[in-house]
Amino acid sequence: MDKEIYKLHAKICKSLSSPIRLEVLDLLRERERSVRDMVASTGTSQPNLSLHLKQMWENGVLARRQEGSVVYYRVSDPEVFDAIDIFRRILSKKLSREHQLAKGRVRR
Image (cartoon, rainbow, N blue to C red; front, side):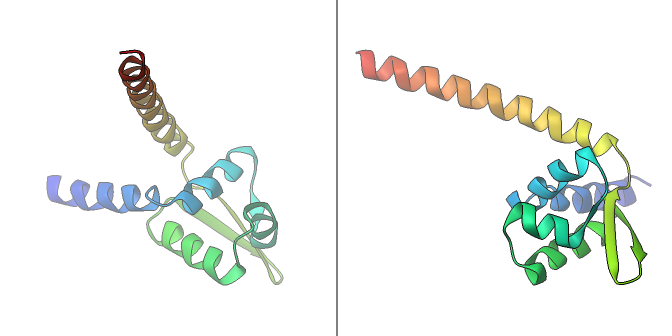
């Protein structure tokens, strides 16, 4: 069972390893969105965004539904935002420490 969990963990982390995918997830915090809406919000091309969405959907991070020719995406489990928020807090602390170290070097 552990090996299976490791594989799934790696897949989810892969879904969180791109700035575009993280931006998409931030957009999906608010509500379900269409591909067209996300293209307009991110400024990325539709083919590029579709590749990212497909990867996140295949890894189980996103769910999708279709109405006619319009595809809508949402996060499959809102707890993914807890993971993102934990990483952001860790990174914020890291940047703060680095900033403090840089300020200390300048003063000397």
